[in-house]
Structure formats: structure tokens, C-alpha cells
Image (tube, rainbow, N blue to C red; front, side, top):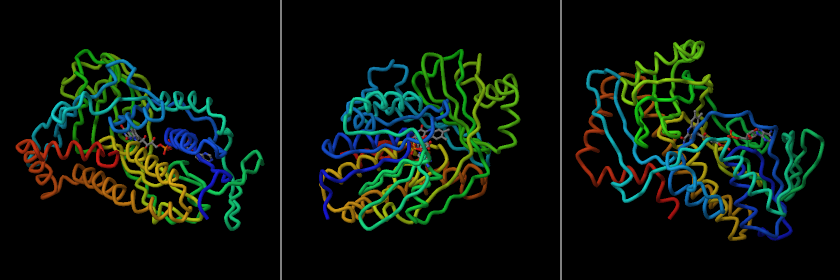
Amino acid sequence: MNISNSDNICVVGGGPLGAITCLGIAKALPNNKIYWVKGEKRAASQRSVAVMKPGIDYLKSLDIDFDSLTSFNQLKGLRLVDITQNLLSAPETLFMSEEIGLDYFALGLNDNLIVSELNKKISTYKNIIHFDVNLKSIIFENNLKTLCLENNEKISVSAILACDGKFSLTRKLADISHNLTELSQVALTTNLTITGDHNLISTEFHTKDGPFTFVPNGEKQVNLVTMLDRKKAEYYASDLSLLKNWVNQQSFGLLGHISSTITPQIIPLHKLTVSSLYKNGVFLVGDSAHAFPPIGAQGFNLGLRDVKSLIDLFSTEASLSKIGADYQKARFADIKFRTQAVMSLNQSLLSGLIPISPARAVGLSLIKQMPALKRKIMKAGMGNAYFS
Ligand SMILES: Cc1cc2nc3c(=O)[nH]c(=O)nc-3n(C[C@H](O)[C@H](O)[C@H](O)COP(=O)(O)OP(=O)(O)OC[C@H]3O[C@@H](n4cnc5c(N)ncnc54)[C@H](O)[C@@H]3O)c2cc1C
């Protein structure tokens, strides 16, 4: 049976990708009732997400315009600096957006800002009904799925778009098998004031502990996202002057000195793979479908491509099983490739093993010497092909 106006749809998860999915599906299917089970109120986040230009353009198509933000949110360059001090250190590599004819690669957006802007827009949609509580269980009966919420309300729908993150309950209730492993590293993230200039370039230092990245976050402001062993992260997070000294030392004064920092957040990291993106009328989107460490600004952007693909398929008004099969076909390879690439890069930093580390160095040298290859890699990193 094909999707029609009488089908209710539920989006589970009030994170950035849940909000975008909710807006996208409500705009694409204005005559359908869209339930949004947002979950409990989100904790404030210091996380700054680099949203690539194709994603920014997609958000514009949903009437969300982040381009009007200050020009300091624009990321015009990406610098990779190897400080692993292995046998053969990779050269510094600079990727600039103008090399592929773009004003900027990405906008650095705070998680909270993304969610609050989307919530404002969503409140203008009459076909969205939202619930600020968690999903508790689902009863699957033929074509109907009944969601039971923690406040005991019940919602009956034809399709569920699961955006409830890497520990997704929806995925579990739909019986989609998955593999979730916690990494030995955690992410430490904080906002810093610098005395130098970031010149709108995101700088990713590759260290033996993992990547250590400064993302421009306003004038003389950067967001630090670094990955390291939990004990070390807790040690540096225990004292702000200790943290400042460590960051100054790690960054070799490339951005001047760190003049102030705020209390950092420590975030556990996981690798998540799933057997399928669709089962029993449930579609996995964003971190419920894939998760890996924050390297190269991939996770959110990958999720945004899930959203676009799924909304495009729902707009065809095909049957749910056809949409499910097509969604799997459209998204699985991209997800598998990004997960493997990020995990291999992280492994190459941690291992310090011959020949992995020199292979990375040689790879970066080749990229520098071959502009056509470099341009191809930049476009692939942004996921351009999936938005065309
Ligand atoms: C430090 C760090 C930096 C990052 N930087 C980047 C970057 O620069 N670029 C990039 O592309 N990606 C980045 N990422 C990845 C990116 O942040 C995530 O991929 C993205 O936020 C996932 O969004 P989501 O909405 O799928 O999941 P989440 O943000 O995890 O949201 C899930 C939501 O579901 C809700 N929920 C959970 N259970 C239930 C339930 N039972 N019922 C109802 N609701 C429920 C939760 O409350 C939550 O609001 C980074 C990640 C980290 C950790």
C-alpha cells in the first residue's frame, strides 16, 4: 500500500537531525499528520558542528538560513598538521574552499543554535504535533505502529523515522541488529579565546592520542574538539590553567596563546554499525544509523544526507517497503565508506605502526602534489555527490 494523506508519521528524537527530519517531512507532506516525540529536554551543549556547504544549501531549501550569521562562522580552510612524531611525519596540508570555487566549506554552528532555530520554524507548521517526553515502547500490528510514551499517551502511525541517537530505543524495538562499541578514547570539547587569528581556517593536529582540532567559532574564538584517553581527559579537565597550558603546548602557538577557556565537556565515543536502515516500518536516520569519532566533520553531515534521501523518497508516495529498499540502496554505501574512513584514520594515528603511519604521510604528500586529486578529495569530503 502506498503512502497517502491519511498516513500519520512519527519522528522520534529532538536532536538536530530529528528536528531537520521533522521539518523536512512536514514540508514535503503538508496534508499528513506528523507527530514529533522529542524526548526529554536536551542538556546545553558546547559542541560546534561544521555543517558543510551542501548541507547549508539543503537547510535553505527548508527555509532555515544560517548564512546570515556572522562571517566568523564561515570555515574557508582546513589545515592538517602532523605532530605524531612517528618515524615519518606527514607534511602540513592546507585545503582552501576557493580551490574548488566555493566561498566557504562549512559553517561552524553550535548544536543548541541549530536545534533552537529549527524549533522556531517547526512551531509555524500546523501539521506537526510535538511531545516533550520519551518513547517507552511500540506495539507493531500489521500496518499500524502504536507508540507508547512515558506519560502514557499513545500515538498510532504508519511509519516511524528514528532519530533518537546512537542508543536508539526505536531501533531496538524494531529489532534491527547493530554493533555498538565504546572506544577507549573520549572527546574533550571546550570554547577558547585566542590571542592570534584563526583566519577562518579549521586546524586539525594529528597527535598520538588522536585528532586535536580548533574550529573557528567567532572573532578570536575557537571550539576545541580533541580525542584522547579518558584518564588524560579527566586530568586536563580537572583544572582550567592545566588545560590552558596543555592546549598551548599542543598547538605550538599556531593560533597565538590561549587567553581563556571555559569548563570542558567530556563525551564518550562509540562506533556504531547497523545491519539495515529499515525494518517493520521504522527508518533509521543520523546517529541511530551510524556513529564514529568526530574526525573530519562527518557525522552530522552524513545524517543530513540520510534526511534528504529519505524525504525525497517519501515525496514519491511509494509503498513503505519500496521506500525502505530504496533508502537502504541510496544510503548504505556512503555510511559504510565514511565509517571505515574515519575509523582507519583514527587507527592510523593511534597505532604509530609501520607501515600505517608512513602510508598516511605519503598519501598527504600525494594530495599536495596533485591538485586534481586534492579537489576531488575536498568535494568527496563535503559529500557533494549526494546533494546534486
Ligand atoms: C565532540 C563532537 C563534535 C562533533 N563535530 C561534528 C562536526 O563538526 N561535523 C559533523 O558533521 N558532525 C560532528 N559530530 C557528530 C554530530 O554531532 C552528530 O552526528 C549529530 O549531533 C547527531 O545528531 P542526531 O540528532 O542524530 O542525534 P542526537 O544529537 O544524539 O539526538 C538524539 C535525540 O534523541 C532523543 N532521544 C533519545 N532517546 C529517546 C527516546 N526514547 N524518546 C524520544 N527521544 C529520545 C535524545 O534526547 C536526543 O535529543 C560531532 C560529535 C561530537 C561528539
